[in-house]
Length: 474
Image 1 (cartoon, rainbow, N blue to C red):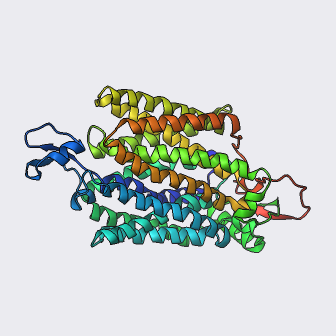
Image 2 (image 1 turned 60 degrees about the horizontal axis):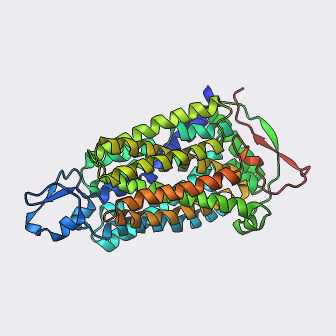
């Protein structure tokens, strides 16, 4: 099969797509905080907050209430509560990246990944059944915790369970675009935020089943902990599902390291610092972009579906280019995506400055969103491929922590943009330009590295070697 995919790999890919729905709560926030256009009396249709504040509430009329959002139910129109709703969820992600990353390196990918999905299911039910704002905010914080668990732990678990050249397959065919489409369809058919949240919880049940009963612990993690017998049994289990023979290969013993030990390792801190800048930058741009997408001209559902379709198609194109063109490296992907983002949002800023709000804005916004998605692909892959197995999720968690700090900026930036729209485009351009320069001078190439052979410190190879399954067709 293409990319040496066997039955086990296929199950891993499907599990990732199912679990990725938990991350769809980011898109759910767009619908939960959606505020339709309105008009004051016989005035023009607008979303101008000054018009809303000066209009007599008896004359205020909402236009095209496509989705019954929490913002309408709790009267958050032109209020800081919309930003608060998102900030609390992002705060949960911030805390979760630290906790789940460290816990996963200590207790394993499987138990912590399962807990993250369980929290997502419970928090989604709790959101839909929230009797008041305080309960709702707690539920969203827990939802944020689960998002972090999936992004940090389940992602590492999946990538450690497949072959190096299959990582781009995950990004190409089983990705955020499908999650965006599925999330939008749930909200469309549910019609209101409470029902949609409960449906989300039910749709996560298959992911829970797969992670509990089908996927084994990461053999690479077991290897890093010196649990050799369990590692070999896991590899045999994987080979049995795959329908391939168990073929042992020799791997050098891996020294287990804590996150703090990694920080002290020569050369690691600088590499991590560069990655932290990348994650912070793309998070500010990406989450601000998502939160602003609900304000675009056109139908709310159709716009989000278009975003999803464009992302799905673009990821397949990315996979094709990555496989067939040797010159296309991780550096190419990262720097090209950032340059495209800066260009698109510069054009959008010019359109905003000239008060143009036509279809052209949607087209350029779609392309800009695509560029940001490619940047996310680059930073995820570079981070996973740069870090040692013994500390991969904790160091990835530290990067994700910086991204969540960036995400906390997004609701504030979105709220400010309701009064000064240009601030969003200027911020994206400035951050994008800075990260491009840093990437050009300091980013190391990591394409096709063997995750089990990543070592920050150069040292002599131990003669002690152990068998480990190489998942190849006979």
